[in-house]
Image 1: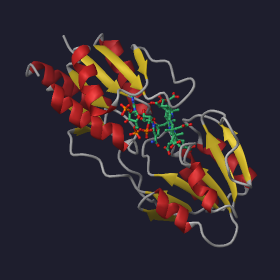
Image 2: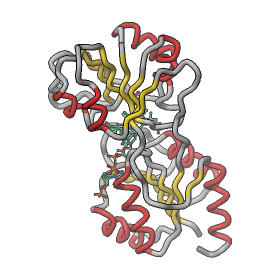
Image 3: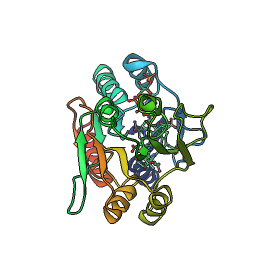
Length: 249
Ligand code: 3Y8
Ligand code: NAP
């Protein structure tokens, strides 16, 4: 009888949880606890870190998990590395449910940068109206570039105001719509968007709005992730689960 651990926090993880619940597969979805009110799920949920790879391996054994699906965000590199190590230590199969990276289309004005540090460095120069579509965790890095007028979007209200002298803060959670993001960019008169190459649909609305308005985008490339088996759809994960179970692994 399989017992699935879904490392969640993405649209795809929620879709997988719905699919396995509909099939009556025993599963638990795990959140890090980054947001105050994570989306309810049709499977049991746990919230909080495991205590590194060792803690995750111990949890997998204690909960008699038989299969791990890493459905975390492509920028959640640490938990993904921990999951590969922990699944190996615990001797259970792992698959990553990922989404393809975005690629610039006709009309896009993207500049790709390797990482957050390079994005901060690229914001030297005269004041501009910049949307930081990066959430809350990295905003403080941009205090090194105080000259800009920032538009910020967080999931939850921050404990204290961001340390950016000129900023407007929007509290909202995705998935977002192109029309909504276009209104947001027009209201802020955004001249540049800084975002991660998250892929998927939930964060893509701002890119469609940027294309329509001719707004350039500073696109942060994904961090390196460990080698692991990957699937790009819920159906492929269910197929893997069927075969992994048939093989008795
Ligand atoms: C806690 C769970 C679902 C999942 C929905 C997806 C889509 C909407 C778009 C923008 C970009 C950003 C951010 C974003 C999106 C989905 C997905 C996605 C980007 C929740 C969630 C958790 C988080 C954590 C949060 C981070 C932040 C990143 C905001 C839930 C809503 C910017 C990533 O305040 C904080 O500390 C927020 C932290 C990690 C990145 C950062 O560095 O700040 N996600 N987002 C998960 C956990 O605790 O394990 O609350 O329901 C999930 C979703 N956010 O089931 O519908 O699939 O990616 N999330 C990015 O892409 O750049 C917003 O504003 O345009
Ligand atoms: P991270 O940097 O890779 O992980 C940092 C630590 O957070 C991990 O070592 C682990 O703690 C804990 N952790 C992360 N994801 C977890 C999960 N799903 N369940 C239990 N513990 C988890 O991760 P992150 O970038 O902060 O992302 C945190 C969560 O937000 C993930 O669920 C991710 O899918 C979601 N998310 C992130 C982004 C993003 O831009 N990074 C975007 C959208 C959603 P221990 O070492 O103590 O086990």
